[in-house]
Amino acid sequence: MVHPHQTPYVTPHILHKNYAQAFDNEFHSNLIGRDLEYFSQAGFDMDRIQLKRNAPVAQLYEDAIRNEGAIISSSGALINFSGKKTGRSPKDKRIVYEETSKDDIWWGSVNIKMDEHTFEINRERAIDYLNTRDNVYVFDGFAGWDPKYRIKVRVICARAYHALFMNNMLIRPTEEELASFGEPDFIIYNAGQFPANRFTKGMSSTTSVEINFKRMEMVILGTEYAGEMKKGVFSVMHYLQPVKFGQLSLHSSANVGMEKGDVTLFFGLSGTGKTTLSADPNRLLIGDDEHVWSDTGVFNIEGGCYAKCINLSSEKEPEIFNAIRFGSILENVVYNPLTRIPDYDDVGITENTRCAYPIEYIPNAKIPCMVDRQPSNIIMLTCDAFGVLPPVSKLTADQASYHFLAGYTSKTPGTEDGVLEPIPTFSTCYSAPFIVLHPGRYAEMLAERMSKHNVSCWLINTGWTGGKFGTGKRCPLKYTRRIVDAVHSGELLNSEFETFGGFGLQIPTAVEGVPREVLNPRLAWADKEAFEREVRKLAGMFQKAFKLYESDVQESVRLAGPRVD
Image (cartoon, rainbow, N blue to C red; front, side, top):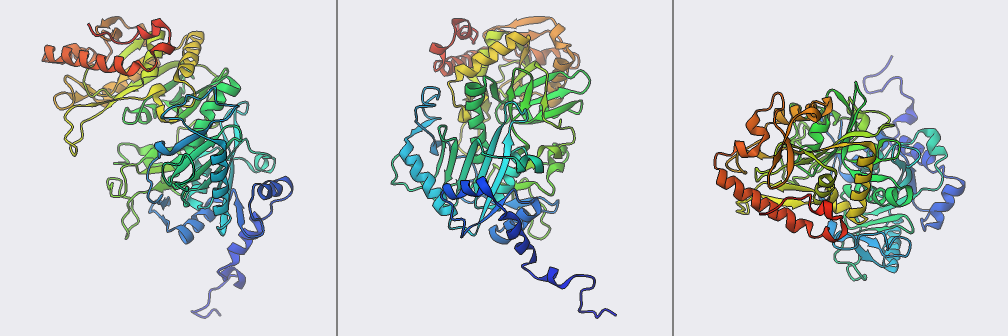
């Protein structure tokens, strides 16, 4: 007979509150040989700290809830917070100026120089801080799905949230791969809870995100925003792939047709529709953000997705919405304290709310995330709020290089600061904040590969038609999807084209399901004079932005841009 106050069928020691933790300690302390030697030599106090290597997701949940104030959402995702910094800190990003990489780096406002001694000081500061923590998390994983070009990445951090984030964003090793992992190719020391010393030479604030290509190490101080680690790995791949492997790294999404197996790369800045348009029910998703175009095909760099959550709904983006479950991390998302239901419309913490989840949480993801086939199409996406660019244009090789280097989109006027005009944004190679080499090197490799494999390139405008922002309207998504379908089917390639003056673009005269006046902006604008003014204005903006690259490109590429008569 069981008394009401007793718990039946449970071994008494399992009820002890430290039972699981005691086993965790025993399991994760089992570092032997070279692994143990590595951490000792790096300066870690192995007698004091508790290292947890590739801890299970459930245990990271427990630690984040117990130690970091995380909570579990109604759908099972972990909601965690990055503190003061809710986005990247580009002004605090540094690259060490050293002999092995100094001649390759594109130095300037994106890649700010740091001397080797300052890096050593900050590295020591990060390890000293990690030595004060009771728990230190280690995650060993891969960047790059193709074994020929992948690198081994080790993340060392003090927050379970950061360990789980990189568990989702890197490619997770099998037990066999972990057992034989060996020496990592790249190490991240994340001591983001601890500030940099502002009086250290070269420091401009208490935040420092720095990469040393000679040591193949990254140190993070003064920011707990997890996205710094993701983009740190991309920066390293953006350097290594062209320099070491001779392959082209790209800030793009990619998908592959289920029937024909044709591959498409999508370039585009925030708000252009890159994620939405690459999620296609008739195609498999290779990845949503970072890829390498290799000699043998295309592969994803990451093992997960880092999706924006602002205004997310199951109706608009069901794949992302349904991926927010156990194992996913919701970052800086407001939630109802009673129901634990996230409120994706609430921007009280930040507009940059995010979710990180393994790519296999997307139903039509291609696993492994790689294809041994060259791309058939490249789609460069822009959101032109000036209402000038056509919904679709076929680009020549020189035009493709020009628009890749320009990386144009625009932001719509904001209501708070009184800006009445659209704001142009030029982000070279569609990845200016993460660029490592001179943009011309990436553009040259892109042109070579496009020529060699006879790849078609399309400029697709998902922005305004019939007038600029305020008078025209945004091109309906159904038309854009129809255009993308016509690209994939080959229908668009066989269309008749006419020249769009000013920009010299080739635009189709007809696409089934898309009105003629939508295809040609001149026909869509009622005020023709106003249209010509906007054409000249935008063309002038392109020319001004492109001056930065003019001296480093062939004349044919320079002449492929818009003309102001």
